[in-house]
Image (cartoon, rainbow, N blue to C red):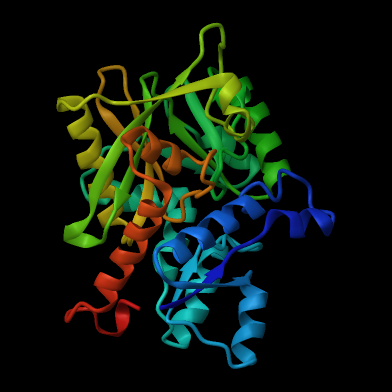
Length: 334
């Protein structure tokens, strides 16, 4: 089978003068090399396509693939993660992971939380600040937690994200509105443990492959799982799997239910946090989870579970092929 790889290579954008924070969600050459090597180890042929514009150029030149392994994040707009899937769907070219609808929904954390809540799943109470005048309309009780509504990789999260009164809310929200030029998601702050759950599969066949807790090392206070912490995780955090039991089972059930409710396909990584009573709540989902073989959360989780990297890639491809060739797939399941 001939697989094409679509991705946004971080170094390409850095060479064009992008700031590191703006290119944070993009992938390193190591990630692309690892995915291509895993695909070839599985007996397939891997061709590197590149980003959305590279894909358009390749398609215009007549190139085609049996399946596209897509991890492209896109560069502009709140539907940026939907751009590559939309182009591939237009030409009926099968691809891995989420479709354009889910890519758009899940990048917009407000929309994702509304859908999760409508399905009866737990998620912190929230509101959105779209402009400075909205700050005085926030009626949720403090403490609250703020982050940009449409960013990933912990971008925009810092110790200032936790606000305990109106003055802190106003200061942090104004700074976030200015820095990220997008609405600010305001959530009730949950003081409990934080975990991320790996999910493989689609619809009824979706299943959790593990629940990994993020634990800050002793002496680190007011720290949150931000982009800075993720980039320096060996300094700040330790990861451990939740032992099998009721707590892990409930986290897995919530993660799989959110994955399915949001229409995620093949793979996702679902972030949860516990409230003061230990009940898990949905925070957000990444339907295009990071796949750096050493440093990304999902491969780390797999490593703790004893799942080799090439098996993770194989599971994603297998899930895509299974749904594409399902007799019930139709044209909506490319």
